Length: 439
Image (cartoon, rainbow, N blue to C red; front, side):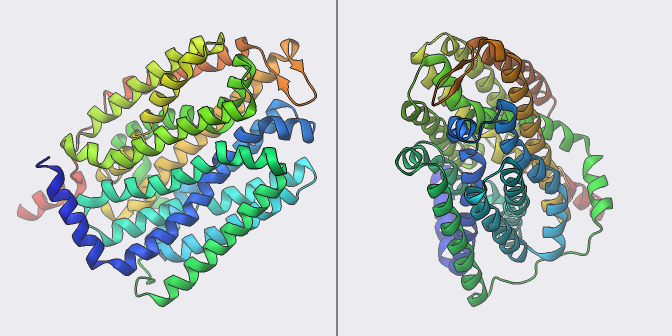
């Protein structure tokens, strides 16, 4: 308790002193929430609807998730450099505008090609948003508050993903999948317009930039061994989490446990909720643990491994095992903000967005590859498929192969986490510079 009260008091002081800035950050967070909704809702929540309505294979449906993630992940290193060079507010508003265009196009698309084009546009817009938020927080607040403020940002963003599970499923059952997505696109447009209007009226819409060269900056980050080890560890955790929450989780429960669409979406809602709670508390947990990054990242990999083990009975129809498996899987996502802070601490502070962009890009490219792999595995088990008027049901063996692959990856992430350099919340570059200055 003695550790918590001073932190709460300092946070209250920040809220009083930087009201305009926090208002802008809050509005930027709302735009970020819409981007997270799009990556969770499609295709996971409407997998069956898309497959039946558009007569698609599993690989074609999972590609709707992957193409978003390939673009998002591939753009992250360059997005980070753009944010460092141009400034966060301008880049976020640009990304929000592009995201809105893709969000409106998707529900209006009548062919698979147009669906892919709209997802490409969404991924391109979304790729500019998160790092803009990170840069805005990093540029205006002390590093002591970075983890807690980033946790709040992820709380709002993940809440957008939360709406992409059971609430979105209920809207789909009532109105079909096109009308709710069109409404979300319109709401996203309004959020971007309001954010642009408010930032123009405040004093925080200024150019926070440095004159960096993109490729030398990327090379410097990629040669950092500490960055690579941390990025690999959390890329695996995040990829497995996103595969289940945004692509196969709901369908796996419907196919293996014979759950209704609403019941399966309720479980993915709880999975997302546990993740929202985990990331929102991760900053505080990190502070209470003395900012021990390695310890908490190892703990995250252990929770992931246990979660995957508990998922095995689910494949056999064990409904009682769904909740503990999903809660642990969601809790493992606390690694995301912790690793984000860690990556910032093992790289030059001038390249904050660039370094986090490289890490974020690796994470999302990992998700995309894993999603493609999962789609290929499901198609491989086509002989055991049961087709109905409303869905295509895959055998438990198909999901067993996917989970086995995820377990092997999770085990490698645990080993990687054991080799992470402990920073205790301090930037090792800044510390080294202070030593050189004294010499």
